[in-house]
Image 1 (cartoon, rainbow, N blue to C red):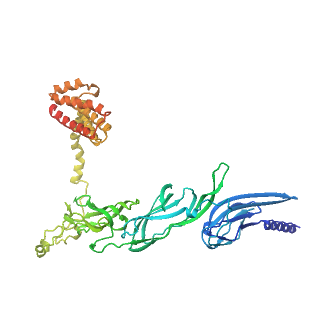
Image 2 (cartoon, rainbow, N blue to C red):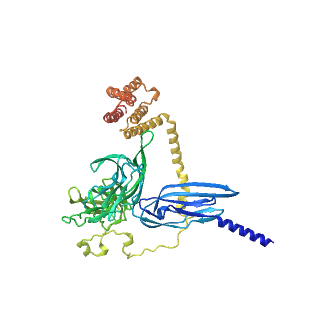
Image 3 (cartoon, rainbow, N blue to C red):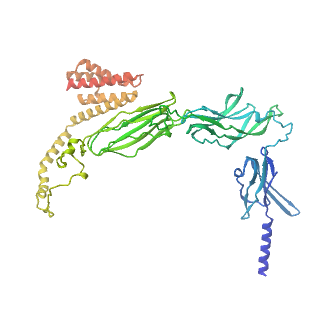
Length: 589
């Protein structure tokens, strides 16, 4: 009996599963390249996790959907259910295309549709409702153009390609998609980002159009001859006016589409002239400056220097190598650190590239780094130009010497040569100095007793140093004067740093003058009245004109912070402060 019940459940379950249907239906199996296709994914039971096929990889573009519809009805006690997902597709290529499987999960089980083959032919003439016929056609009012800045450049001369989409004032662009991207074989290319598409007014074929710049690219041809730029192709969805109007008299729009291409472009690239081409020419084309700069030329033993080889200018900066320095054997050179600071606007690459070499001398002496040459082809004069750096002399002050190679030294006996050599290459010693293996014990040695009695001998010096420190600490007035003097120098130095910034300059200068007075006159800031300062300075035999000028400068600091001042007046006030402080130092000391 149990077996019969289980069997009945299995039969009912299989029947239920067999009743689930999930299929894909298309509106037609053959269509033109300019026609649209409707596809419906239908199921008779509700499901989850619907996954459509990747239409783009199948050769179609989604122009509508997905839209979802659900219907359910009951007839004579029996219920029916239908759910569908609908897409509107447009083919992107001709040929036999296959729409792959879609999937969905129903009652815990995955169902898939069968693949569908679609035959896409050439574009066909579409019948249109006369009332819905567009007043203008997208074919005659939509163009994609590639503007080439120079179709006959030299090798490595920059050119620009700007792709513009021209469209009539009556057309509205709703969507566009790249069908094929341009290819720049045998070119070095750099795309320039366009942050926002902006419609502009322009002329095309002698008529006024609107246009949008879609892409900007800088190209550097890498070889001579005829080079082809493969076209950019787009699929454009747009709205065009019809002959119908709404209730208020406004023109009704209808959907239209067009595939546009900029067409292939041929660039005739000229080779660089052979006449006058230097042997060391490395392919640099543009306008450059060449610099070879050492970080220092005087070194001590064990120190290193950095040699910076740099090219600055406009041209194919990323497309050539910098020349390498030639070093004497006594200077060890390591592999360079390459740096690039290059931007690429529409006019071409601009900026700088550099190689930084670390150089370590192996011996003392004077060493010469030979001049370096950099050659480039100047597009302005259409000629080769060579820039040669200056000779660099490196002076190593100490360390092992280098062997002399003069004829006189070669004739002398090797042992008698007065040559300093590195320890690793020293001559073999001819005399032996033997040292005993056993050493005297530290305990009871002279060093032992010196270390024992040294602390006792240092006691008088510690006592004297402590008394001197206590005396200095008690000298409150002297400490204040020293502190004020140090602050005066500090703020005067700070004022010098702010010569180009008015307000912080005069704040620092005023503090410097106040601390100078506190150090020399032993008065507090609260007592610094004009009469008090004049009285004390005159008592110290200061020149009255200098005193008057100093007080005037102190008062001017507060006023000048809020009054308009020029860099010239700021510099003059700083120079005046230096002069007055120096004069008063001499007069009241």
